[in-house]
Length: 312
Image 1 (tube, rainbow, N blue to C red):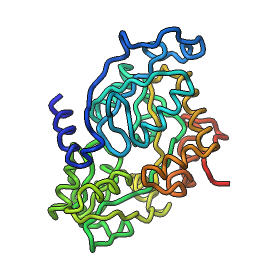
Image 2 (image 1 turned 90 degrees about the vertical axis):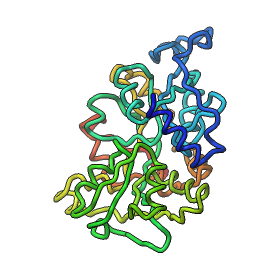
Image 3 (image 1 turned 45 degrees about the vertical axis):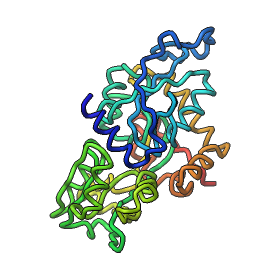
Image 4 (image 1 turned 180 degrees about the vertical axis):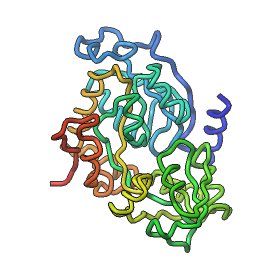
């Protein structure tokens, strides 16, 4: 609980207008919908008609305001839930709590820049990717890094538990700085204690606007080659990664239903609209890299699975 409070307080300094108020909620209780349809009840949520969503304060991806999840992932899950007749109830925690809440089935789902990994899918279910996240770096103004080789010997920061931890540890001579939240990365970057911060791109863009005194900018890493990844498999996470909404292993019907809604949002333009709304480029976020399909085929998707895309 202490870690959650610290995280909420530090993130208030990042984007204060988006983070008030924050409240952790239960699974529905007296507020659970009445007269839930048979099709909605068949989705198998913990409380029929309620979608209990684990989130951390991570604007502009997820924030709870007036009891509702807002941000990019918030908009996506709210849209899908409405189509399925589900009432979204947020459960505010930290990143580790998000994963644990799903794996223990205290929560129906978690959203907010969760990267698909072969290890995580063993303990839960991933939807189709609501978007693909390019490898973004927060750097001090005037500095430029474009390739993995440029990172050798530098001080590199990210958040504890994020996929870039393993990648950073594989960079020759690089020093890993791991933080409980993104503000720790930004604080040390602005103070010159680290050279580069690896975070989700919309978070860096939001910090640039909210904290101009840090004098940071967003850069995108040129993805490592196949040969580099073969030599150092942890470099995989320096490539664009596929996000997913994460559910308990038992929630097969719910996962399929939400994946279907996500796929429809690619087709009807809703995802492109939401990516643009939150400062992203749809061509960067909604077109998969070539390795996305191969990573999941035969693992948690059929051999012929095609990742959703806005590409024609």
